[in-house]
Amino acid sequence: MRVFCFTADLDRDVNIRIPGAAAAGSADRGDGNSPRFGSARAGLDILLEILRDAGVKATFFAEGRTLENVSAKGLSEHEVGVHGYDHEDMTSMSGQEIRECLGRAVRSVRVAAGRDPVSFRAPYMKINETVLGILPEFGIRYDSSMYAQMGGSIRPRMLSGGVTEVPVPEGRDRSGNKIAAYLWPMHEGKRMPEDYVNMASEIREDIFVLATHTWHMAESRDRGIMAPDEVSRNAENVRAVIDGIVGMGFEPMSVSDAAEYFQNGKD
Ligand SMILES: [Zn+2]
Image 1 (cartoon, rainbow, N blue to C red):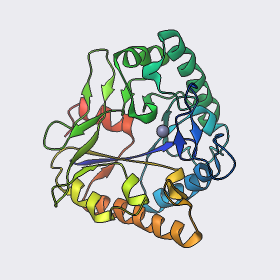
Image 2 (cartoon, rainbow, N blue to C red; image 1 turned 90 degrees about the horizontal axis):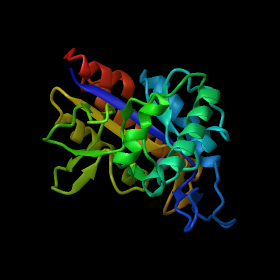
Image 3 (cartoon, protein in one colour; image 1 turned 90 degrees about the vertical axis):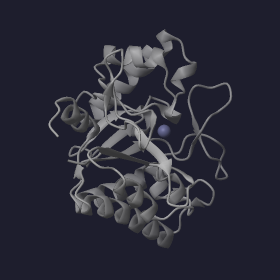
């Protein structure tokens, strides 16, 4: 069986690194770089509707502070994982700092979602052995912060510290150009839905993890906050990707369900 994991990072709008600070900011739209959450909030509603229509259970990797600034209502049908508290690059933190950050992040998921998270995606997809080694202390058993090459093993695999990696695939499109299963370029008008459907079509008996951000449903990094017609077009593109993949017979699962499915060797 082929498994489809739709994942969305629920983080502050167009997050950017702020030099000298652990906490990320947002791209400046005229009011400075302070974190904004309006596009994350609007985009979450749009995504939830698309997922509901498609009957897809997804995984939201939620950053703590963003979770405290958007309504978590509607997330109950989905898995809610951890994505830092302030969108920190944890690879530049000490063990103590990582523990403090994860403690706050896990608490905010517990409060907002009403359950303990078991999955993690690192902000900026930046992970190392130190972070991976600390995750189990917080009950986190699954990570989706790495890329894996299509054609090689893209199945969930247990890492040495006991965390199971559920990687995001990357490969080449039909023109031979590099493509990753992150919808970023499509939201920016640089790729079409079929690029991702074609990518998934190459999967045989495996798993296809697709990733995006909720803010990217309502705001472009390059063009700013989207006008309503652009929001609609963008949403239709995401629908086309999801419908195309599910239409090929992929079984939608959350990241933790998929990891357990493959670990139990059920296919
Ligand atoms: Zn992020």
